[in-house]
Amino acid sequence: MIRKRADFLAANRGKRFVTPNFVLLAHRRRSDHPIPAETIRRGITVTKKIGNAVARNRMKRRFRALLAATLPRDGIAGVDHVMIGRKANTEADFATMKAELEKGLKYLAKKLG
Image 1: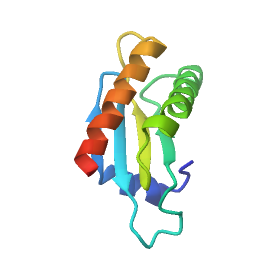
Image 2 (image 1 turned 180 degrees about the vertical axis):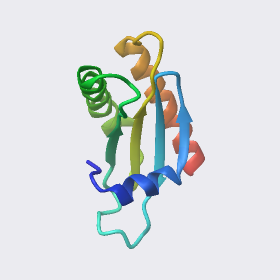
Image 3 (image 1 turned 120 degrees about the horizontal axis):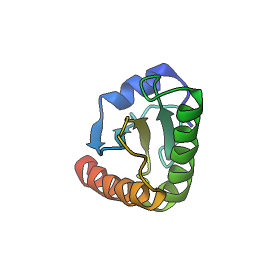
Image 4 (image 1 turned 30 degrees about the horizontal axis):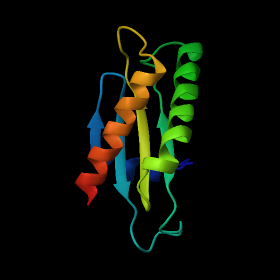
């Protein structure tokens, strides 16, 4: 799990995939990074623009479940993955968000090479 601001800022310099519900960032870590190269890290960002604490925590729970279900299979080794919540008019169902995440991971894997 990504916790440090510097890691989030580094991920922001990476590639991105935008959907109506979230933005997925992927950034390949440097070779001299202290985290092992085969590790897949994840991070979640949900700002106050999304809504109150209940709405933000619900979105974070959904993102954690999506990443736990998808990253071991489709994640890119040596890459930091960050999901940023976006405010949508209606809340998407879990299957739609999972399909978007899988599509985004395939797209970013192609972009990162």
